[in-house]
Image (tube, rainbow, N blue to C red; front, side, top):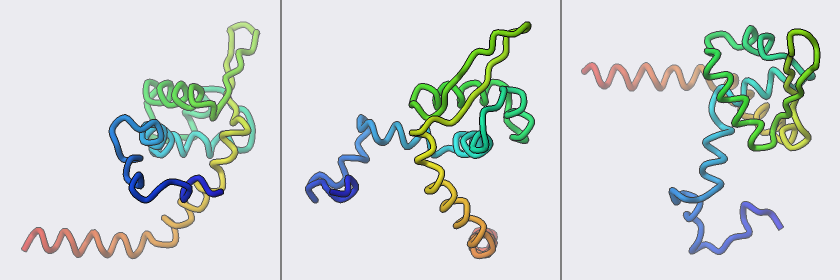
Length: 130
């Protein structure tokens, strides 16, 4: 049975309750940095600074927090490489790989519809100015 449709209709909006675990998880995986980190790591393990260089605009603090969230949720793994100085690399886990298709679809949607979104934004801004 599909988990998205296996609930009773009267419980349909309980997923929007403040204490719903799925709401917190969605918040943690659907932010821009999480999606981008998972995409950057899709081709294989990378070290922190390599990830940072590929994500223009991310701060060291934001990347550290993002990596910790993704690791805590089981979406990436962290491996300490015992060299001098000690290095750390991150990789997408099998669970994290299950997000590749949905994220690719979302990214594809943004590319396919950016022109329409920009037109809507302009129209909205013009209405506000009037």
